[in-house]
Every structure is written in C-alpha cells, then in structure tokens.
Image (cartoon, rainbow, N blue to C red; front, side, top):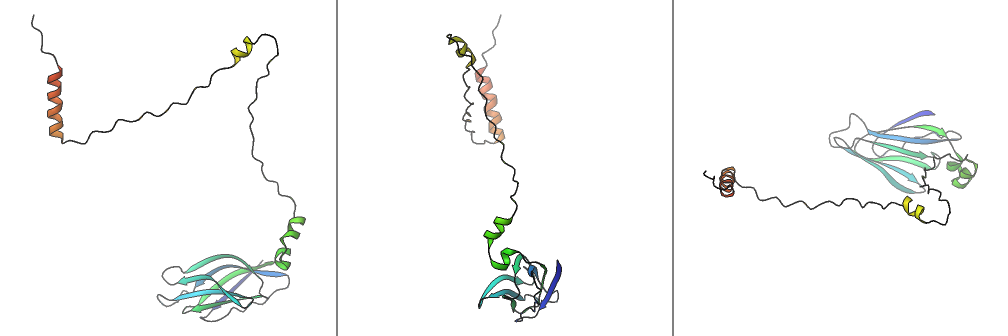
Length: 184
C-alpha cells in the first residue's frame, strides 16, 4: 500500500496517476488549515459524465470527512467546488477481481468458505421412562410448573400535604384511635 495525497484549489480536479493493477482507496478529505473563516467546499466524484457529491465541508463546523471509497483513477475524477482548498488523502491498494471486472460472483466462487461460529442450541432432555403396566410411576415424575408471580398494582400516593397539617392530622388520628385509659 502506498500513500496518496492531493491539495485541491476551489474548482480544481485531482491529478491521480493511475498505477497498473491498483485502485485508489480514498480515506479522508480535510479543509486546508488556512481556509478563510466560514468558507465551504464540496467534494465531488465524476463518473460517466455524472457528478456525485461525497462530502460537504465548512470551516468552523464539519472540517473533515472520512471515507472508505475504492476508486479507479482511470474512470473517475475528484473535484471540488467552493471557496476553500481541500486536502484529500488515501492510498493505493492492489486491484481485486471485484473492482477489475465488477464481478462479485467470481470472487465468491474462489473465496475460501468462512468459518462462522454457529449458534449453540441447547435441547431439553426428556428423562427416559421405562415402560411398565403401572402408570403410577409416570405420574410421580411429572410436577406442575409454577406460574410466574404477577406484579401487584401499587396503591396511588395521596397528594402531598403541608408538614404542619400532616402532623396535626396524625396527632388527631392517634388520639381518636386510642381508647381512653381504664381506671381501677
């Protein structure tokens, strides 16, 4: 893998020298550190006569954008529009069959099968029951399943009362509930 970088002025296109058997992996776009305050820049990929926006940068806001784009420099152009210089970085990577001819089928056929971890399945084992004429032993082994407890409804809280009134009511209720003392 070899590093690649380009500084693009507003309205300019990146000059990418294609390497035989390699594609460009575009990793990041970043505004120039000396970009004017509040300036913006858009990064475009041009392919087949069409332009596609892949990032919109703004000084003081979104000043960089990460990518994971594989581009064939023979068929695409990178350009910018706006008022700020943009730095593009990435690296060259060997071209795979998928990028070369667009065939994912071929790669799937030749790729080694992946060893994925299979989910574990745990089965409940039934106890073996000896067959005899007496069904009573069968009934002894079976136990009913308990139902899960259900949540009980919570009583509604009474509205909050001022502390003074609450204390008065508590003392009054205590007095009313207590029987008068018995005299001997």
